[in-house]
Image 1 (tube, rainbow, N blue to C red):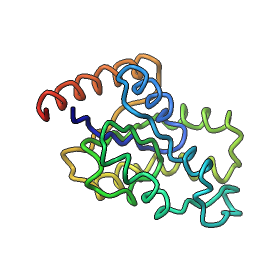
Image 2 (image 1 turned 30 degrees about the horizontal axis):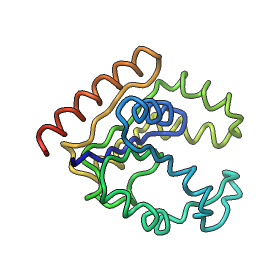
Image 3 (image 1 turned 60 degrees about the horizontal axis):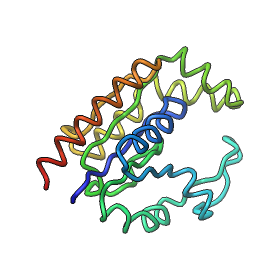
Image 4 (image 1 turned 90 degrees about the horizontal axis):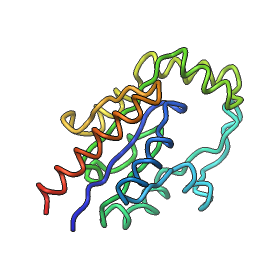
Length: 171
């Protein structure tokens, strides 16, 4: 049976991992957090001193994921999306969070002031939504609010209904 590939993207702290893990748990799809994958495989290309984090080797990540994506049934979680091949995803969800909520979440993570401000600005200017719209067919890109637990449940319900319909239509 063919299953869809789903991309969850958005600024760090918007709830991609929470949504992705719960979605995988409820649907049986495979969940892949690109940050974890990169850490496990050391898929890095240096270190960013300013943001105090490793620099992702995007080509190696794509190579690492290629076979899994061909199989289908994968939920990919990452804050960037412009380096993934367009053919991989059947739908893209951009999670969005109110700035005050996002600020608090990132502060709790211990982000530096610069990293915190840059990520909140990224959300204000909808950088990742614009990146998704430029990287994928606009009809497969959808925004989801991600501020409170009720929105998480609503997003899960909405995505599970979409998966069910896609599966019926493609098998």
